[in-house]
Length: 77
Image 1 (spheres, rainbow, N blue to C red):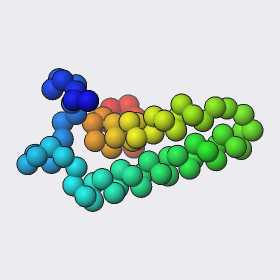
Image 2: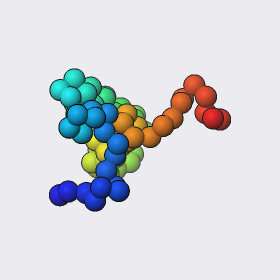
Image 3: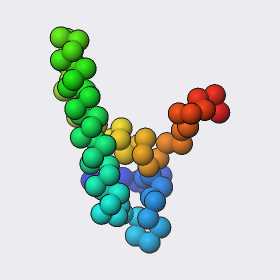
């Protein structure tokens, strides 16, 4: 599925708009850590439905790592 141009994120790679191999590896690593944390917290709470969170992991990691501008050290900016 190809998204309309107004919905596409601004790519980091200006040459062809795709991820480099190292960026792809990093996003996969972060997504794996997030999935692990979802499972650990769901298990520790002995409740919850991790399916929705697990299915959204790649989307959220991509947004936080590549699209959204945020500064955790300065939450009031």
